[in-house]
Length: 295
Image 1 (cartoon, one colour):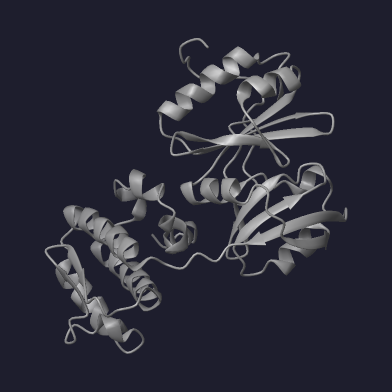
Image 2 (cartoon, helix red, strand yellow):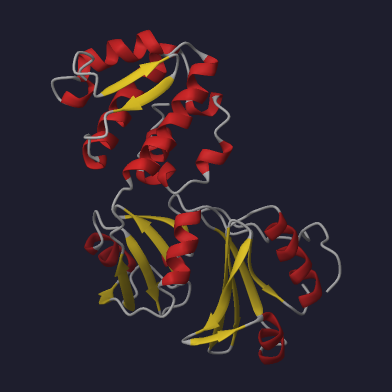
């Protein structure tokens, strides 16, 4: 394979995002116009940049998928069969290819459950969306444009979710694999410690944090400054080891949501590129906070 080259630009290769799902990098491009050598060079460059990706090649009734997690190729498969790129190019010399950005959590889940069977669903896209209210997991469908999508609390967030491609009123077969990953207490604390440190560098956080903690202490007792279960001093978060993750997470989000506007800051004001790639960015509620325009 040749050295990595800058990603090729193709007319119409960057369709708009659908319902909050990031837009594909490219979609359904024929290898007649985008040769395999260029595709591999592009994927290598993106891998070296540390991206998480889902690559899909389709021809006739055959579909193959490859997954990258933070720049590391986890592998490829077609149905239950594992394969590499040499096998892919031999088997599908002419194909239509799609490349989708993923979060690290979505990439790990899509790969881990690539052969997993889930709950069978049938219905239109709207009916399936209603059935998945509040749920987190992977949805796959057999209809055109259904693909694989990663859902967080009842909303499609990553992958391929294009119900319009098959028609919103068309009933399809679906499989849903629910994901129930418990919050890791130490990982959660480290994530929020980094976020508060970055925030404090832009605006002194301590006094504002104390004020919002007093305001919220009735609803979130762990924030009560007098109990010292959760404290922020010189921007450094400290949490009593006895505080559970399920109690800590909503309290931190509530306090941070109140503190930001008092500091005159928005999330977009802060250098959060690395934290945005963390799976906790979504599950912590920060992405939803930003989308609601409150940050």
